[in-house]
Length: 322
Image (tube, rainbow, N blue to C red; front, side):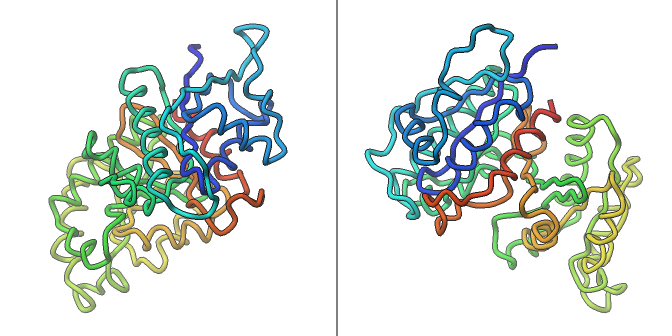
């Protein structure tokens, strides 16, 4: 078996991204057998590890044999901030975290990495740094328009039809052909990333999934026609189901994945079920990309309080997808 090469970006330097990433990687015995490349700055990474009470040698020591796995290396990002003030967004941090991610994506596109695991970035810092994309997935969709934001835990899996747009804009996007294209892309990406078949369940938009048009027309005019056409194409898809019960139903179906029609419809129940262990995975890419399902948590950054569990799960899910 070829040993996979996995890139790790540390996120916004002022948030908890570096903390959860370095905590996750510091226990080599719990990591899969892979070669990890950290995208960052050696000086800054060593300082961060010392501040967390971690031994920098756990990542920087030379292995005695090429068979000693996991292995670690640093891909230097030269434009690192002169100083880092924890808990605050800044243009320097935004540019640095973007350059690290952009570099990792380029390495994956050049087949030097098979997977990328990304610690949380600050969208505010990206904006301050002049970055036009709203986040990791938005940047990836500029190369791969059919890329899909999804969230994974052992009990619940959710794919978002729309994500970082206003609720009003999300409703406007619900159109038969666009939803059908999304469903087909989701089905194809699931077949590529996992050998086991998934059942796709689509959440309704309106209460009771529209109640046959009494509580809204979107189901009758757009959602049901898209589902029926997908079924005619042979997809294992069901719905629309009332959004107040669909997530509870899916908890008892191991191979279910729910299509949520907008960000909070999917993320509120997902984070209730799996806040500490959930993973954000981008489907539909030629490489694997996973991330913790939480943000930068500026309020606890620099205090050593961040829980790395979601980052650890992101590492293992990335490996499982390979």
